[in-house]
Structure formats: C-alpha cells, structure tokens
Image 1 (cartoon, helix red, strand yellow):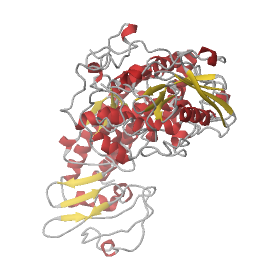
Image 2 (cartoon, rainbow over the protein chains, first blue to last red):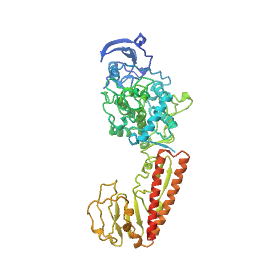
Image 3 (cartoon, rainbow over the protein chains, first blue to last red):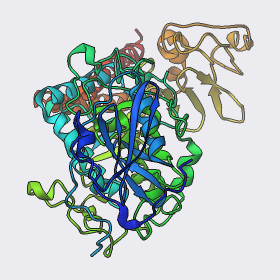
Image 4 (cartoon, one colour):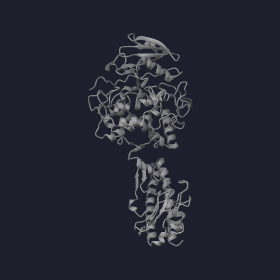
Length: 118
Length: 469
C-alpha cells in the first residue's frame, strides 16, 4: 500500500506532463534536487524531488509526478498512487519490461484547478 | 428512440466483427487518436473529481456516435469485469479485443489491435499496444460483484472536497476507485496494465468497453437512488459543478455540463438490462412450434424500434377451448392432454421435440380419444420430428370433431393471427425497403416469415381436416 509521502499538501497538485526527451534530465529545474540514483531491472533511475514533486528519469526518459496527501501521483500511472517516487519508477519499469520506456508527455490541463472552487 | 448497449459477452461473432471494423475505421481516419489525445489533454478535468462520470458519459457518447456514423448497427458494448474476470475470457479472443501482452515487454501480438498487424500503431506512448493483465501487485484481480454491490449502495453522489482522497466516501469516489484504491474503475485499468496505465489509456480499445460498464453502473445507481442528485451543485472545482461547462467540448463550441448528461436515455441510449431494451431480446427464439390461442385480444405486435417484440409467444402451440371442458396445450417441448374428470378434460402428452430434448415420455391419462395410448404412461422415450399437432393429426384434431364448432373457432383465430403476421411482415418489409431495418431486424423478418409459413401450413392442414381431408 502507498506510504505517506514526504510532503503533504492539497495545493501540491500540479501538472505532471512537462516535456520529456532523451535529455530530459537536463530539463529538471535547478531547485529540484536529485535525491538518488539506482538501477532496477537493468534500467538506471534518477529520482528528483522539488517542493511539490518532480520526476523520475528512467534511462533518460522523464516521468513526472506530484506529491499528494495520500501518495505519489503520475499521469504515467494514472489510476493508482504510490508510496514513493522509487515505487513509481519500479512499477513503470515492470510495465514496460525490456522495452525502452517511451512515453508521450501529458499536456497541461489549463482549465482545471482543484484549489480554486467558485 | 434509443439504441441499446449490450454486454459484450452476448455479442454475436458478426456484431463483434462489425464493432472491431468500425473501431479500425475510426483509427484509420485519425479520429480515434483525437479521442486519445483529448483524454490525455484533459486528464485532470475528467478524473479525480465529481465530473469524472459525466465527462466520460459525454466522451463515450461522442465516440459511439462516430462509430455509428461508420456502421449504424454498432453500439458500444460493455465489459462486466465482475463476470468476465480473467485473461481467458472471450473478450480477449483474437476476434475481438485480442489477448494479453507477451512477457518480454507486454506487447499484444495477435488480434485486430496488434502492432504487428499494421492497423494499430499508437500515436502516443507507443508504438505497440501493451497489456500486463494481473501483473500489478496492487491489482492482481478484478473487482468483484460484491465490490459493485457495495458501491451501488453508497450515497451521496459525491462529497466535499470533491476529490480523490483515499478515505473520501461517496459514490463517485468509490466507483472511480480512489477509496482505499485502486478499486473498481481504477483497479480495472491497473489490472489490464500496459497501455491502460497512462493518461493515454484509450489507446487500448478495451478502455471504451470498460468505461461503458462504469457508465452503466452510474445509470444503475441513478435508478436505485432517484432522490440523490448530482453533486456539487455549486462551490466545487471549476468544471465539476452541476452546470459548469466541461472541456474540451466548451472549447469546441458545445456547452456540455454535468446537468446535461444526467439522463442517459435523453442522450439516445439505454442498457440491455433496462426494461426499454430487455423485453426485445425475447423475439421468436423458437420456431419449432406454433401457437393457436383463442384469446386473440392478447396478441400484440409491438414495434418499438430498434427493438422488436412479439408478446405472443408463438413458440408454444396451444389449442385452448375456453368452454372449460377440454384443453390441448403444447407448451413448447411438451404437449399435454389431461382429463382430470369432473367435466373438465385435459390431454397431456409429453412429446419431446428433437433438438430440444433428448427424449421423454408419453403420458396419456384418461384420454377418451385414445384409450390404448392412455395406458402407455412412462413407456419410454418418444421422439417426433414435428410438433405434436402436426405429427399426430388423428389425435390432435380428434377434439375438433368431438366438439363441434371448435375447428371453426380455431381456424378463425388462426386466420386473425395470420392477418396480424401479414401486417407485421409488411412493416418489416417497409423498414427494409427504407434501409432502416438493421441486422436484428433482418433476422426478425426472416424468423417472422418462417413463423408465418409454418402457421399458414397449420391453417391449411386444419382446413383440410375440416373438409374431411
């Protein structure tokens, strides 16, 4: 089951579809700290974290996530939440198997803002 | 008029083929990928909040209309994953959705949506369709019937803060599957895995069958809780209040709000479990026998297209004399002639029809018309190639001479039924000429024609009998 994330805030939700590319790691914002790197099933994973979340980079392919009150959420695995970015990265790798992770970035959803009810 | 969405497990091979062909045609046109992109672009608008169900209802309706523009006989089938809950279900056969993905990378290798087939290249998160059924530790199994029952008992529709909290009760959040998730809707996405995981999940055509069932469950919930309305009416996130317009349709010039999609019948469709659809599935499914009834006022022909129903079950052959003295009733596989004395005479003959039964017994009790056979009770299986009345005219028509006037009455009733058949056939022929009959209608026309011919033969035989032939 997902574990409580390191950060918890309703305002944490943010678009998770920034541009991905083979050099995605270069696009990680300077304020998003690289927490750690590890290898899982032959793939290299870099975990980055910012104030509200950031991304994991799997063999150069960036997968964004946000930190939410009850878990880590990503449009890449859009129907579940994870206890940590590492768990997210591992499930993405299991799902793609030996194929290279090649995801299409999810565009910003401009009309949606959970934090500003009217 | 509404069209009926069916359980995918009930589709004929032709219906499956036509659905698949329409989906492939939509893909070839590029329109299918527009749907995928819409789902990706408005992932946040359409999920994890109150408008999850209305948004997908509108989304599916538009998709279905596009399919029906390609083939008017196609409707969106639903996948009841509480029943067809394994990777070996017929849903995943090569003539429909295709199978699970291969272990190496999850790629689906056969069926109409295999990348290798050349007709299904993903525009997003591709290029190949992938599935990993039951591989996730969070969703090794599909939701159960009990999960659905519990969800359908949950009220109200939604609760503040109208989001996806794991402890947030309310029907929408429960059905979407965030409550102690992944459950229900979410769990199915995770169970199928592969291409069903990302925001581009409509890449997998089973997405639409899955969401069709989710929509059906919402319709079921609405029917079960008519006093429970959509929430929030106001004060919720933008795009999720009752009268808020939903994207992307507002941006495309069409204002669609949750309030506008609450009545799915008004949108043009119903589900096969609803009364508006269900009775029509009973149309003449057994033409082995005919039915004569003297209570003709009960004979009804109802054409409530796209469903068609004859409420008079002519699969049963009945000769009925409401004089209260005799009955000869064939209730399908069994013909009964019973004499229970006391002035009431009934005949029971458990004649079994080949193809319907493997045999049976002949029981004759106090049959004054055939005292010898009446002793043959339980003498072993009897097989007849024709309905009893046709096969045994000497017996079945004996009553017509015993009870004067009954033959004329039967003939008159039969002629009235024949006339009604002619009217019905005429209507179907007219619909066919106008090109509005559809596949089901064609079948019905054929079956009805056969029924008519059989009844006409019965009539002629009765008439000859009356003439002493």
